[in-house]
Structure formats: C-alpha cells, structure tokens
Amino acid sequence: MGGVKVAGGGGGVEKVRCQSVAAVARSRMRPWVLRATTTVLLWTCVMQLTAVGERWGPRVLKGWPSCRTAQEAASAALAATRLPMPVPVVEKAPLPPKRIYRNNGYLMVSCNGGLNQMRAAICDMVVIARYLNVTLIVPELDKTSFWNDPSEFQDIFDVEHFITSLRDEVRILRELPPRVKRRVELGMFHSMPPISWSDISYYRNKILPLIRKHKVLHLNRTDARLANNGLPLDVQKLRCRVNFGSLKFTSDIEELGRRVIRLLRQNGPFLVLHLRYEMDMLAFSGCTEGCTREEADELTRMRYAYPWWKEKVINSYAKRKDGLCPLTPEEIALVLRALDIDRSMQIYIAAGEIYGGKRRMAALTSAYPNVVRKETLLQPSDLMFFQNHSSQMAALDYLVSLESDIFVPTYDGNMAKVVEGHRRFMGFKKTILLDRKLIVELVDQYNSGSMLWDEFSSLIKSVHANRMGAASKRTVIHDKPKEEDYFYANPQECLRDPNLLRTS
Image (cartoon, rainbow, N blue to C red; front, side):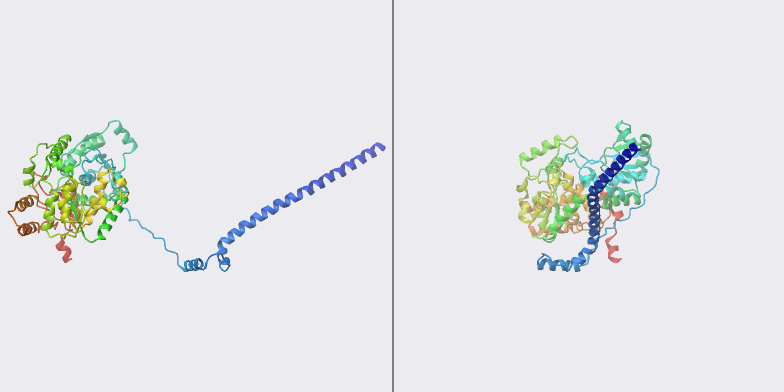
C-alpha cells in the first residue's frame, strides 16, 4: 500500500508541475496574441479610414485651416466651381462594307519614277486590281531611280486609310499571306511590264490569264499603263476616288504641310512656283539656256551616266524654241511681271535645289523679294527626318501647291499635271498653264530690244487669259496618247461644270 501511496504522491506532484508549466506558457502567449490581434484590428481600421477618406475626406476637410496662401485657396475654390471639361469624342467615319468576290490571284506592283508619277500609277493599279478581281499588295515604291529615296509606301501615305477606304472595291493587303509568300520566295511567280496606255480589255484578255496561271503576278513598271480616254465611266471615277480620297499623306507630312501653309497665310496670299530648274531635269531634258560652258558639259555627262535616260544627243536651242524646255528663272520673272503679279506677293518655290543657285535666282528675287522655300520657313529640326527623302519633301510641296492662291508650273512634269488636276477637282483653283513656245519667242524679242515692255506684257496677258485651269475638255489624239491631254491633269469625268455650280 505504501508503494501505491508513493506512486500516487509522485503523480500528484507531476500533475501540479504540468499545470504550472501550462500556466506559464499561457501567460507568455497572451501578450503575443494580444499584439497580433491589435495589429490586425489597426490594419483593418486604416483600410476602412482610407476608403472613407477618399469619399468623404475632401468634404470634411474643406473648412479646415491649411497652409495654402489666399491666392492658392482662391484658385482652388474657382477651380472647384468650374464644370469638368467634357472629353471630346472623335467618331471615326464608318468603314465601307467589304466587297465580296472570288479572288483570282495576287497582284504585286513596283512603281517607278518620282512621287507624282508613282501616285498616278498607284491609282491605275488599284483600278486594274479591282476589275480583274484580284488581291492587290501594297505597292512598292521606287528606290533605285535618280532620287535614290529609300521611303516605303507607309513612310509617305497613310497605309491603313488606303486599305480601308477602298475595301468596298478591292482587297488590299500589306504583304502576301505566308503560304503565297513562300511561293514567291521560291520563284513561283511571273514578272513583266504591262503595255503602256492600255485599256481594260488588255488587262482582262492578256493579264488576267497570267494571274490565274501563276497565282501571283508582279508588274515591274507602272507609269502610264492605263489609257487616258476610252475607258468606262466607273473606271475613271475610281481613279479619281483613289487619287483624291484614298491617297492621304501620313499625319507627320500633313501636319508639317499645314504648318507651312499657316506661316504663309500669316503674311497674305501666296503663289506657288513649281520651278523645274533642278540639275536632274536640265540633264534629262538637255536644256542649257543661260548655263555656262562648264555647266552644260556637267549636265551632258550626267545625262550619259544614267542609262534609262534614252535620249543622249540633244539640241538645246531647237528644243527651247519648240517650247520643250522648262522656263529659266529669268524667263519666269519676266512672265510674272507681265501678268501683273504684285511685287509683294509671296513666291513659294516648290522644287529641289535650283541649278546655278543664287546667280540664276537673282532676276527672280530682284523682281519678287518675298521668295521663300520650305527650308527658309521651317527650322532645320523640322525637316531633319525628311532629308535625303525626296518623295517626302515633294509631298510637302504638293500640299502647299494645292492650297496656294495661284499655282504656276514652269514645265509639264508629273507634279505639274497631277497638281493641276487636283486643283480642278478642288473647284478649278487658279492654275496658270504657260505657253512656253510663245513665251520663249516673246522673251527673245523683248530681250533683243525689238519689242517694248507694254506690248510684251499685253501679249503675255492675252495668250494666257484662257489658260487659268478653268473647265475644259481633254484633247484626244488617237494612236498618240503621249501627245494628248493627260487624264490626271484634267479628270473631267469627276468634275462638275462650274457654270452648273453657279446656277444650282
């Protein structure tokens, strides 16, 4: 029994000891639990106060003292009374519905020439793709000609607008689908230049079978590949739609163009002179009137250096007498004076570098001291990204030319013709179409002393009275499309007779 008691006594002691340890442990845990619970409660309170403060804080604190000055407080109070400015909502024009058609294949095109030659060609290629029911790949621009401009289509034109604005007529893709692209990379396509001045039947009868056969056709020349006349009305109207609506320049070019126009408008009306007296034009045309012997030799060497300029031996004197040379700066100065263009008129030179520089421009700047260029109106930083990109620079000149009060081209180049047609479309804006053959004859007589100024001026005015870009019919010369009026210079099918406009 004693052993039992001893054992029982020991168990009691052990039990007491365990209770004491538990009590100590509980006493140690209680502060930690309290701290943890307090922390959680405080964090919850902070979060709730933050939420309430964001909603009610400004109202509660409105009347509290602050460290702001009276002026700051007044400004804040005034701002609080103003209604919030509504955020402008720019609604995009609804896209035309897609035209659904069975695709006959893919048309790739490589444009050649300067900006406006390529512009007209792009319009023609869209028309051809539409009437052959093929998919057009965004055209490739010329990078190998004299200008050596590396610009891509999207560097000059708004490619997204180009594609979407024509989706109800033709499917246009930025690039070939992958499976078709692999075929092209393997050489499984056909490449050729189409015949110049062709009608739609040529493309249907000769080109469409090639597309169906090869699936991909590459047209490697695009200038003047569609006739001026004898085409269905809807074909001509689509050419206009592309030219005047779908070929928008990029936002950067458009914005810089608007800035140049604003700068000009600040000082009144302005005349754009498309002075085609750059080195490449003189070398190509073989016109050396007013040039030194050294300059004439330099131009000849340049003409022989470019194999795609076919005509090499040129009689400058005879060509000028036939009115086939661009007018010189000296000649155009006389013409503008004879037409009574005010001496204070701003003359914007839409051209590259004038051959002969200040020496050749002296007569013009003497007669018209307000001669400007984009390079003189803008800061160098404005044009930094346009340097060595002649097509982008030409795009700026194009925009300014469209908005000018008077447009005067000194030669029948592509820009002169395309701008002329665009200005007709804009409401027959004043475009003086110079009769170069007669001008050269009259200038020579005046310079030789055989004609007085009053007679010279009177004759210049009378000759050009009906050459101001008014409504007229294109001259058609069968079998000689190069000699007839160019469609893009006078897209009469897309123009409203101004006489009808006045009576409507």
